[in-house]
Image (tube, rainbow, N blue to C red; front, side, top):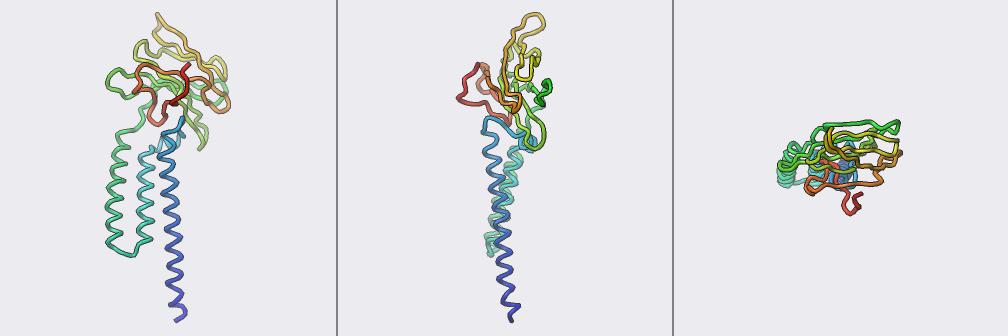
Length: 215
């Protein structure tokens, strides 16, 4: 009798631990999916995994936590169906929002940074989006630097030093040089720029820093 009386208590404690574990996972994944893409930079790991997929995982974890917390089968089925539909919608959105592959990359001189140029996905008047990436380890991040309109267009880039990079816009016959500075330790741009196409001012996953003066 004593053993049988203890079993519900042990089962209850186990259920509460599982609820707490999956609820915690849901909160952490949800915060990452929401906060990282809306920041001035993006963690490379999150960008590669896609925030939509992380959001789908957060929904799945939340549904699992709800299933363990409820003893009613009808509520578990309802939560599972609703959560499954939301997760499926997020996964579908993620499949259509995979960041395009950079068309140009240039490693910095001993600073561990990489300059990337990505053609955005705009149907009309696309632009070239320039970002700075520090891809080392799990803490690798990517920052928006500037975007270049389709005309004159991006030509090439050159690292002058660990903290200075020049972007040449135009073509081989007529071009102009734009100079930008970055923190060689962190990769954070000291100066940023913009282009006329406001809707294409970021690479998917790396938002244009709003409110920062273009230079």
